[in-house]
Amino acid sequence: MTLPDHAPDRTFQVDLRGLVDLLSHHLYSSPRVYLRELMQNAVDALTARRALEPGAPAGSFGIRLYADRSVVRVEDDGVGLTEADVHTFLATIGRSSKRADGIAEQRGDFIGQFGIGLLSCFLVADEIHVVSRSARTPAAPAVEWRGRGDGSYTVRTLPASARPTPGTTVTLTPRADAGEWTAPARVHTLAQHFGSLLRHPVTFDDGSGAPVVPVNPEEAPWARTYPTPGARSRALAKYGEEVFGFAPLDTLELDLPAVGLKGIACVLPEAVPAGRRHGHRVHVKGMLLSEQAEEILPDWAFFVRCVIDAESLRPTASRESLYEDDTLAAVRDALAEQLRAWIARVAASDPELLHRFLQAHHLSVKSLAVHDDEILRMLLPWLPFETTDGHCTLDEFSRTHRTVLVTSSVEEFRQVAAIASAAGLGVVNGGYTYDRQLVHRLPEIRPEVSVADLDPATLTAHLDPVDRETELAAAAYLARARDALAVFDCDVALRAFQPASAPALLVDSREARHERTRSRLAREQEGGLWGDILGALQQEAPRAQLILNQLNPLVRTAVAIDEPELARTSAEALYGQAALLSRRPLRPAESSLINRSFLDLLAHALRKDS
Image 1: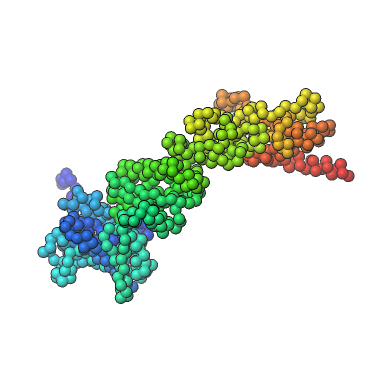
Image 2 (image 1 turned 180 degrees about the vertical axis):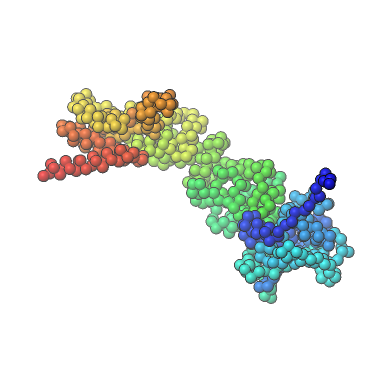
């Protein structure tokens, strides 16, 4: 027996119920999309008919929605279908009429291009009833297609009276469990939600006998004509407030003619919590695509929320987000440039708005300024920072301090702020995101100002030494204090500094603590491979320094203590208090020391009183 060279071709068998389940759980976010898909197909049919009859008066073709408790119906005056079209496009999953000969090259004019939208109707109904008549073949009869959720369908031709004019009517008989999405009020709400910016007239009839209402009675606000620029600005701000629920700090128009994009960006009046991003409302050719599209703007632009309508952006298969391609990347860059231009315009012409904007969104602007030299030059002097003079701008701070010192961490700033301020040093807290990088770039804007990292030696150099007699009188106490604090790699010194209310200053840094930890591990692992690695990394471990303030009455009393144990306990208590004031996390040994020294001092006081 001779086997054939090639096995016969076979076609895939599709379980329609399984496919609908897949769509409902993994492609579409909610059953509500059925109405969007029907409206989208109607819009695409109208687009095709407009191309077929370009001379038809504007508004002569539209979409009519009807919903009562028994049916949902969507009717359009679009290009319609012949019987052959029905067999080709409605009965073949994944086949789209937008791929038909003669219009394939115009697919960019259509919203839907994937050929699966009609299946979304099975999310709310078990049967889809379509009656259509072709405008391309006027002599062709009307055709009826009935598709069922079990995968079967029927097709038959109808007399001309069943559909006197070209177009398509889709009728759904909702399932009992789909009432949430097919009730007349919900259908009307969904139609407004998805179709408020559609360019074709859309009307809704709830079957009650009440007047038919327009779904999209007005053009998009940016497409309308206004008597004055002020009236236009107010109208756009009002629209932004209606959409987003907040009164914008400012509203700027977005316009990218190359991709047919128009819209607005609303500046949030309050800061956005760190790590939280707002999505944007994106329409494609008037149809709402997504209310949470984050990809349309760069990460740093979290101070605005946008409503845009674009012609040339590609939706994904679910049509609920944007396809990441070169066009989207170019749009994102162009919109970012328009936001930069707005910041530049506000900085140059509206100081009051700039102040309110930076009060709310300085973190966003700082993240932009780190990578954008133009924004850096414009706004760095006006950005707020935490300094030894309080919260102020670098412009204000640099008028008083020609040498600006910057800390590497928040805890370092908190350790030194009060003493540095009393000593006349200008220190900026560089521990917050972006701050240290930005402060170091201040000389690019203010060449007369120098910036340096705060070094502990710089601070201690500004503390006054005590006279020799005082130093000698305190020598015994200082020796006992050094011995008590040796376990923390901490030296002890006596100086005089303001404010006198501060008994001690603990000068240390995160890097120094890490280096001491490496040194300790190297000693513990001495001789092994890990010890060799740590030894190679080891530098001379810098010691922390507890600086006692001779101007403080408590310190003057402490250094005169003769009793060795009490002197040791008082030194531990001063170290613990200084560590608490630094607000850095305490090591277990430090927490234990604070508790022990407190109890020992309390016990000493009680013994003395008794």
